[in-house]
Image (cartoon, rainbow, N blue to C red; front, side, top):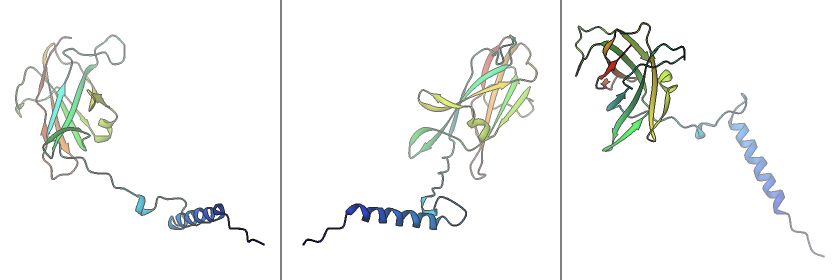
Length: 179
């Protein structure tokens, strides 16, 4: 008379039940939580080294009412990591300014903007897309009051969330705006 061999399937069932019991026990009494050993911390974004800003040369009608409401701006942020330039998702605040007239280089402190916009990292993330397979941000800058007819200049200043990194400014963009 031969003794039947134990089936491998019972052994696997016991191993799986034991693993699941251990997993539930490690999550505590509060329900199913991710165990500490499975949690990963997000990597901080590298420091912004350069900002590319571009706009079409005319104002846009964002709401379809036939009136120009502002200008769509395309922003791209770049980092220099290990000698390679890469497009990144920045962690910080962006302040944009619209100035009447043509201003090249650094805009003088005594020139007041016609309007400013401040975007948090979350607001900027809502405008995220891709441009040439790189991370980019299409930001619709709506104005409260339209600037007078003529040239306008846009500025952009990025302030990192961590205070130990410097601010980065984009080159101003000058547009031949027509009302």
